[in-house]
Image 1: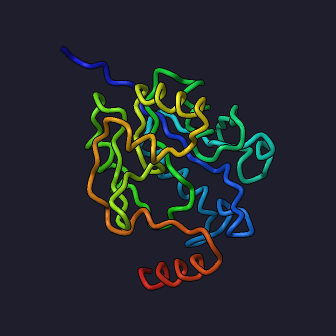
Image 2: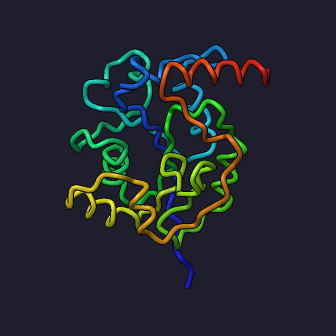
Image 3: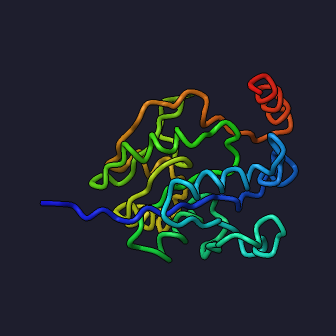
Length: 199
């Protein structure tokens, strides 16, 4: 029996509060442009449609206002709010969910994820190079993942990684340092030095 292949949409998560960075991570420039716009261009190139995940108070932010948006329809519960809101709006679609704070991510890494996609699984994900656990914020979430995410939300459990651990997933080897993220000013300085050394 052939399993129907859901369309692949992109969801760029930009709704975080960036408390540890003490400024909007999405607006931080790397290689001359805000990392949100760099991540957006990557996502647009590899998916059929792409959307920016935002909180309601971010809708009119100049960096975000010009991009197609899906506004969180759940309380401030972290990335799960964005994923669930997107799944509610387009329940027939699979979602390539991407955090906006991955300055080393490239198109080849995203294409590797897409090429390995298994529509019979709940998700196709990379392993973290730090602990081997699934990375929920560079992952393809199939429509079948929605029921578990929604149930966990209703039970008060909001961690997408734990949802993946409970799911039928395809777990790919970590793609080197491509998923290293930046959460603090110190990590940002270190990342800038790394990018300069690669230039």
